[in-house]
Image: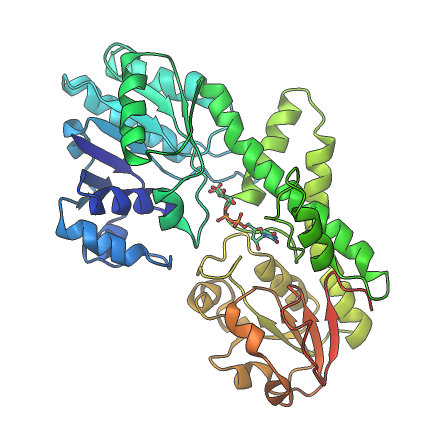
Length: 435
Ligand code: UGA
């Protein structure tokens, strides 16, 4: 049995590496030559804990990395894991997936194999039946359910935990018709994840499940962020105690109740906008989803307000940002709130210095010489008038008076309450803590 995986981003490369390390005969395909070359040499094109080790293990077995789509001809299962970014109006951009599907269809036309095509990319409900299937059938001149199988299989992995999530997902969702192809796919996943529930449904429900998950996670975050703003107005109130205690109620669950500067990353913001756009087109006014998104945008304003309240006019003020990655243990800065914050502060003519253990290079690609990049904490804090902790990197927990002494004005805004329990000789503000 041969497995092809098209698109070697977080989802595709994690799946490729995990399957290959388990000994499956895998071909990972990506059109980006430079990326392929890195992967062939056992180097991940992005930072993801544990990924390189699993990849290198796979490369010692049967893993092949290629930019040649012709190789999918030999595959029994073809996973599609290309990105589905957003257009300027928030709607989903299907150009990459359409291209990948067209290529698969052209290859189907030329051979008699009956592969199962599994769509992992996040797509708006209805896309598989209304866009993907017609391209496949028209360009290949073959029939779904007879000459090939088509299955929707949304992915729930989190960046920074991608390998573990790929090996041990909480659920497997398979959308599509109840055919022999579905049976074969179920068998593959049962073998891969023996004790994981497998939900079999139709394409559109499976596609909707993915958006439901991400929208609910975003809702939890905006909910706790709104409560954290209320807590800030109650002297002595602590949002972490509120969130942790709420989380003990099994109906609520403890995860995703950490107040902060808002949700970022390449998925939650994009999927929320795509779902809102889809709801509007469908004639549903998504009032709750709109509020969740609105709160997320306004959370950043809270931070700027705190900064201005203390520093007044921000022109020429030296501000340090700790953490630009959208969350710890990644170098990913896509839709990171810290990046938005820097853009807004630069507009107000503040002088910015940043520090991030992994995302410095990616941040430099955006701001180049417009901001300063500090390798050490001393450099980051030296002569600073305000430090804003944006990303919950473990090492920021260690910050103490010894380091803050380098600041010109010891003003700390802690968006993650990492230093809340410390006795510090600083003017300390934190999201979610009432003063
Ligand atoms: C998210 C989902 O969690 C995954 O299940 C999903 O598969 C993925 O999107 C996707 O659609 O591909 P990810 O983008 O890796 O995963 O990031 P999260 O861990 O969800 O974090 C998103 C943002 O929310 C981060 O900025 C994080 O700091 C913020 N967050 C998260 C909070 O502010 N508070 C929390 O309690 C949790």
